[in-house]
Length: 348
View 1 (cartoon, rainbow, N blue to C red):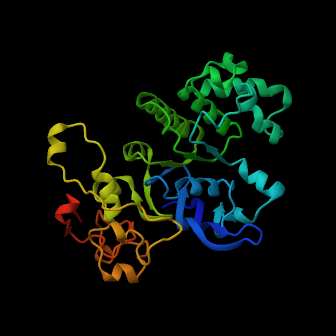
View 2 (cartoon, one colour):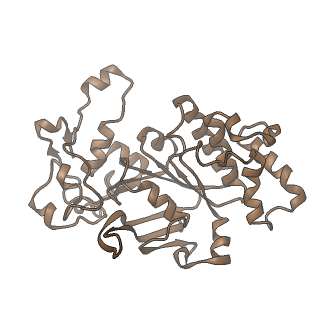
View 3 (tube, helix red, strand yellow):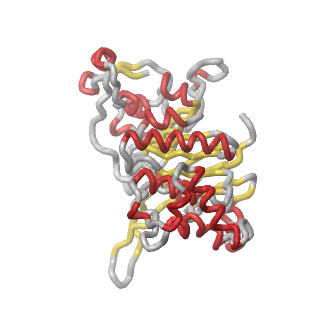
């Protein structure tokens, strides 16, 4: 694999839980992100998938330094951006931009489209001379498929898909190398989702962008991603090339997620085995010991409560040129173990 442009090592974000009114003391912590390691190579799209509440959006905010991590490092071209502040951080933020999830709340309703897309030039005036900003904003609107004459309109005059295009234009204004897209199509209609995804694909080729694309819709992630990381309760539990993850998942959580993806073919749907997980996702303030997925896993044994499975190539596949040679955090990854009847399916 090529040299990573972005490296994340041991990333944690814990939010303290306190009690008391006058004398407040910490009694616990919500472990939103709890030890994430990942790499992003220049020009690729890394998809991050998982259930709601697994820490995906917190991870996105950490990557663009909207949140300070509790522990860990984020290396951009070898420099730890978690230790930067002031002008040094401002310079790095030019190259790492974000597209937010909700196009209805991420745009200031009191600002025109021209002001919204052009605001990055106010913060980074060296990017565009003042007299040239209107033209640059109109060019960006044209690039994302909007009429440049809309520059004086307000967000309420646009549909959801058009608003998200405005958010994408704002993210492109400073010519970044990395865009972190936090569920950018989850609030849009299905037909509009396809248009926005195709636009992101086009822009990646045109501007040589690298994406961290966060979503809970696995079919969308498969369409746009080169590699996929599956996140559960604050950690990456499986990561690899998209074909490896989708065609041959080795972690039971990934298998369960994929078994829930809608299948349009009625015949194929009838013959597909479903894996129905029992119970709810544990609270990030009270994470189970050992493997954090064990409370819902049909493979769980006593070992799973005692040992934390590390993210790596399963021992059964080490040194083997195999489809399964991607990282998985499961003691039994690669083993074919029958799911109990109540689970409703079969796993590897």
